[in-house]
Image (cartoon, rainbow, N blue to C red; front, side):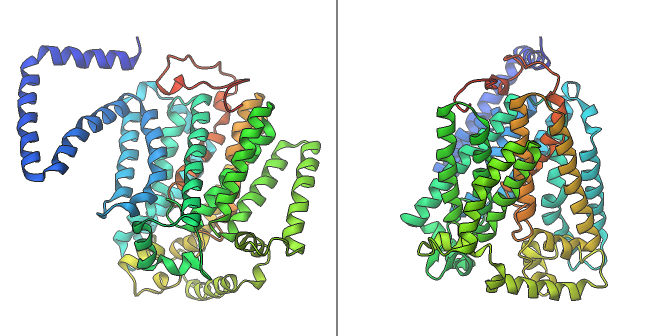
Length: 502
């Protein structure tokens, strides 16, 4: 009997012993339901219907932390859709609450967790970064200290919480494959919604969002930059480029023709999803990630084949004007000619201004002083008035050159650890999964120089989880396949040599 079965039976025994309590609870529920319907009408009825579902979900998370982790991944893709809501609900705070609740479940199920996996160099690097960001709360140059919490979550807190959950929870290769497939499914839906925006039109809520200020960056020369249900076109384009890379790697790695055709279709759909975003710099997710994929294989034949495939495409973009009559192709081409781009030159000017402000501030001006939190809480401070236009520039402003060095050291360390773990693997399918995660991570790390996407949902969720998976890949190296009865999530087949996606 498992710990979960024992917990459930104990709970049922307690309910049988206190039948009178169930009766009192039923009467109380009826009274509260009547009051809610009488005072709130339809909304009250919706609350009554939703409450048992919410309670069931919370109980499931308490019994199995992986359910909470899976829900967190899915809800991360929906956070950008909050623009469709009439009320300004704290969706991000709710997602943080789900993460903390899942972490609580991990501690409550501590006997089933493998705490020794926290003895991981990647976790130590992340802990160093966490400590530094916590110390930044006391930065005397911070214009508004409480704003620290708004950016600290995306900088280190959420990453640290996810690291604990992913490392100690008994995740299987089937769970990793489910994570990747879920990522692909959401990405296809996002691409289709981006096509709808581009070729059919926007919803009233999307039009209102553009009219509120986003229009100046999302409609250029009369052309819409699709943003789908992500935070903005920059993140949407980078995510689409990332999953294009994922599908391309799977296309190369799988052997069966039907599977290759499936991934080829995904590559085409997702790549055009990237194209309609009009996000030029996202091309470097593909360039850097593809180069990493080729190099990580350490085989001369795949490298030659990969370069032979990519070089002509890059040559067409660099040295010809073929396809310039199509706006999306023209935008992609300009990414390879940055010196001819006015917006790129403006970014360089802004960085020079920032450099002048920070020359005597090696620790920056405090977490939460720039970008969204800075504009909201300290709009008159210089840090809030210069758009960073880059994840690393934002870190530079808020944590100084010291913080940027620590952060880049952490990323480089994780990539090196992941590379070492990858090269120790013997199982071809496990190697493919880790190649996917590590290559995409490298691509996102590179493009974050030009887009502040690493701290935005769902990119942050994917990056944070992926980093802990590929840096602990050895956990699956010599273990037999899990039993299908281990958990609800284990019921997903691992497709060792066959299956719908192999």
